[in-house]
Amino acid sequence: MLLYGAGLAAFRRGDNARCRDLSQRSLDAAVEARSARAQALAHVGLSRAAFRDHDWTRGLEHARSAGRIAAESGDEAAALKALHMEAEINRAAGKYTTAVPLYERLLEGDRATGDVRGVAMELYNLGSVLVQIGELDRAETLLRESLDLAAGHDRGQIAYTTLGLAGLAARRGDPAAAGRLLGSVKAYFDAVGEVLDPAEQLELQSHRVAAESAGRTVFEAAYLDGRSVAPSDAAAGYLDPH
Image 1 (cartoon, helix red, strand yellow):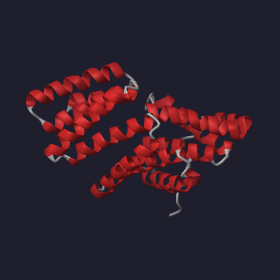
Image 2 (tube, rainbow, N blue to C red; image 1 turned 180 degrees about the vertical axis):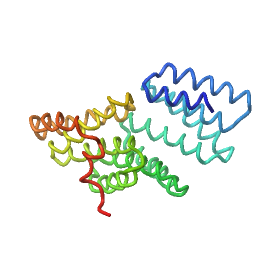
Image 3 (tube, rainbow, N blue to C red; image 1 turned 60 degrees about the vertical axis):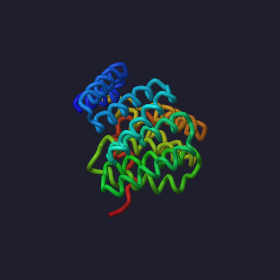
C-alpha cells in the first residue's frame, strides 16, 4: 500500500516514470502477497501512468483489470477507483457522452458511502464533462454543489471546481469571469507543483479558447488579475448562500 501511495504522489507531481515503476512494484508485491485489494489498487496506479502517457488503450485495460479484481473480492472502494479511471480516460479521449454515465455511477456510489470529498470531486468531474457537451444549466448546478461541499474542507478540490466554473463562464460568453477564474487556478497549481491530468489540460485550453473568442483583451486583463487571487475567493460568487 505504501508503494501505491507513493506512486499516486509521483503521478500528481507529473513524475510519470516513477509512478509507473512504483505501481508495477506495488502490483508485483500484491501478487506475491495474494492481496486482492492491493492488486486492484496497483492496476489503478498503472492505469494512471498510462493515462498520463495518453495511452488510452492500456489505461483502460488496467482500469478494467482493477475493476474486475475489486468486484470479485467485494471491494467497493477499489471498484470505484477503477471506475473513476475508466471515466477519466474516456473523458480525456473526448468521449464525453460515454463518460457521463460513468461519472453518474461514481457520484451515486460516493453519495451512498457518505464520501463527501468523493462527492465534491465527482460533482466537479460530471459538471466539467457537461460543460463540454453544452449542458450548461445542469453543469452549473453540479459545480455549485461541488464548490459548496469543498469550501473550507479541501483547497485542492476548490481549485479544480474553479476550473470547471471558468469553463462555464467562458461558454456563457463572460471573458472577465473566465479570465479571473482561470488565472487563479493556474497560479494555484503552479504554486503547489501539481500537474493537471490530461483531461483537465485539454479542458483548460478549451476554456481559454472559448473565453478569448468572447473577448480576448478583457480575458487577458482578468487572467492577470486572477493570478493574485486564491481560487476560493475567485469562485466565491458561486457559493450557495447559507
